[in-house]
Image 1 (tube, helix red, strand yellow):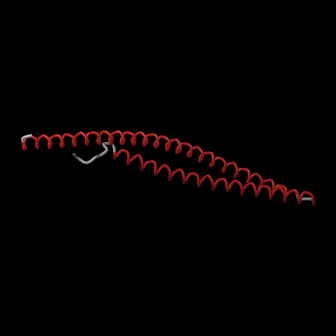
Image 2: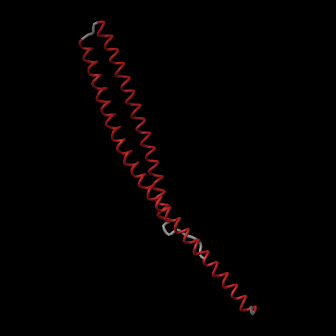
Image 3: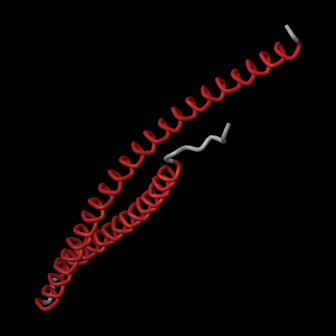
Length: 148
């Protein structure tokens, strides 16, 4: 009997490679999201420090030109924060898409593995039948040759 070979083995291997690529992409996206969250936190710290410094200066009596500088810097930090959040939301969307793709691939791989298992069981059953036929032939040949 010929050696077992899963008919969709190459498809299964390709799907597994796609899964590996998607998992790598997911890790990259998670890392990028973590970096954006760190940048967001850093922005918030700068903003809080700027607000404290402004309050201190205002309590002492502040030059109007310096008030404008603080306000401009606060606006710049706010715009940066909005940009960071916008990038983070885009990364979350991309991550959700990749997770969906991973789930799809895992379902397809599970189905292919089930097909492989069914083919393997059918192969084993056919192999047993072939062995039984060979034994029957051998026993039948001995009976004829031995005159039994």
